[in-house]
Image (cartoon, rainbow over all chains, first blue to last red; front, side, top):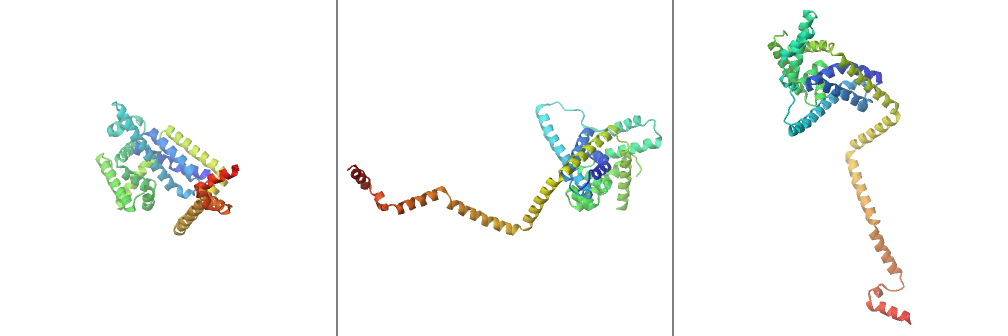
Length: 187
Length: 129
């Protein structure tokens, strides 16, 4: 059984990546925070007795399931909203303009050195590109490369075959590289 | 394949750099969530002997049943037949029939006397005298 200190160390290591990963998927920081918090609590509550070596995979599974629950709830909520109201929110993030984000990043970092600014621009472009990826490709890319899982672990976490993981990863990398090239970012 | 891996690693390196620039409010909320999870685990660890023992026992039983599914199914069918037999044997209607038979057999009068309609009238008439 993992000790509270081991759990704390594990969560401290993964929490920021988990937040970003969730934010890319749900495109809402508040919702992403709630989802990560739920996943942390579920891990402690249901899998506290498991050895800490199993935590990365378990946490990823919980995170993915919690995200799916969020999408289901959103679907139901959207259904009721469309049924009872013709007014729709203008905060829909589907129509993100990369230039707007770049402009705001420009304003925020105006006092920082040029190199740092260029890097933050590149990061913003990558994050936007990740958000635009199909969900399964993004999931595979993040688990395989960002969480540094091997193909078998990624397949287990995603509940698909290893072949599918390889395909998703390959497509994701090519799509990201193509998007970066289009934005004029050197690989 | 190698180039693909290298590209992925470069992208991931930049994403890692992006993590250091997270909003302080988000970092604080994540730390708070982590603290809650750790507190929950510590609280569960205190009640560990009962819950873990109970879960371990349940898991062992489940594993045993899973490993002996064939035998367990046959045993369950036998138990079901036995229970059904005992239940039918001990049902109230069966008991009533048995008691009725016992009464008739132990009675001084032969069973045919109860079926004879004139016997009841004769019995009332003779008891008046």
